[in-house]
Length: 92
Image 1 (cartoon, rainbow, N blue to C red):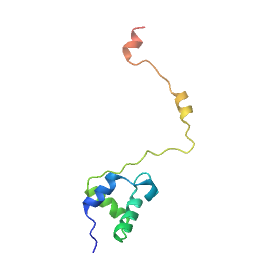
Image 2: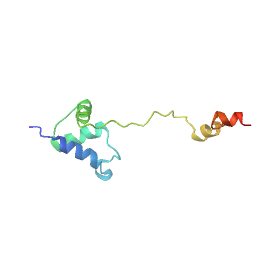
Image 3: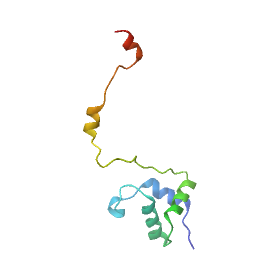
Image 4: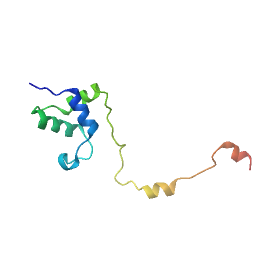
């Protein structure tokens, strides 16, 4: 019988992966699914893992999308810095 407790899952997520053992630096749903399969021998869909995480009040964290050709130096050079407030314009 499947006996994964919410305490095990939340503890696993809070502790984080061990890079030398899990080969990842942060948990993804797929990684958690694989860890559950290794620990309990139960195959779950990653959406099911997501539902369990939501039930435990864990939020998904994802980085904003980044264009592969994005150049940070070019963006910084393109920025313009104007006056900080409208009063500075009228005072001159």
